[in-house]
Image (cartoon, rainbow, N blue to C red; front, side, top):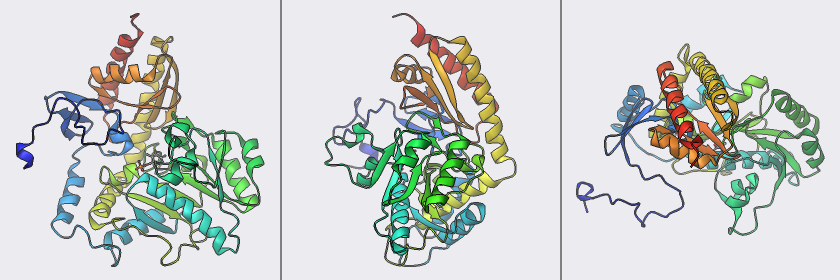
Length: 403
Ligand SMILES: *Cc1c(COP(=O)(O)O)cnc(C)c1O
């Protein structure tokens, strides 16, 4: 059947494996912070494809980068040098703690790679017995067999056999528990500086600094998962910069490709010393199309004033949300986050609020801890923040009405 002859049914096709709780909306196109559904409805998009569309939809520079590359070469495999990879890696290394970058396609793969780097580092040091990572309750690192074990969310683990061994999970923010969990087999500590899926839980600067010190003291690697918090989302290129610390290994994805599947794990030369030829690979990872877009995203994020804009819009949103919280003390329990990674913890079921927002043509994402995430595109306009607040206010009115 040709695509033009395809008629979309009213309900989702049973041929698509039903692993998601999808809303019954089909989007046709996007423009900046807006998406247009097939029925013509316009939605203000503060879901951003779960923090992926960092520059909103249909950004002219990303379209140009993708189409220019599409006319030249899509894919050639990693059997050969890829110029765009070398350029993006050099730029990322000059901007961060890292000396080495491996390109992959997704956040889960980036986290898996980061875990492999940490284990392989100690192996290369003659300590193959040091392979366990300390990880945190409420974490999310992806849906592969290893990353679901790393996060330990029972809902994600159920029915998939015994969780992969090698992760010691402690409460987020509990330094004493981390110290107690360190043993002769510990390779490192892995965490999100801000737990996104877990409900926008921001690690304190003191906690991140203390973890860095613990790692230094015990010869452990500090592994950060900045898949959601990175690429400018908090107003810094990576969220750990707010704490003035440097990780040894870091996973990145989501915003790094601005909507094109791209992930990366990065490490210092020392931490990456076990990653020798043949130790890891990916067929698609960092293919010419992906890194062409990745370089264009980075161009935009590095433009003078871009990160300051994210910070200013984050502050603006925070003020608006504080006002909303005052207006709905019975509904909004807490507002938290950093930059444009914002969360609203509510008292009623968060799904009801997300649905009410959707009814107001305002797209948001639910998260753990009964929290709704607002993930505006990083180039969001101040007027769109105001518009978002108005739609959120109307949605809260809907859910606060006694039924
Ligand atoms: C989304 C996310 C992942 C997983 O990314 P996928 O691309 O879905 O595999 C991992 N870690 C964090 C912090 C994330 O937010």
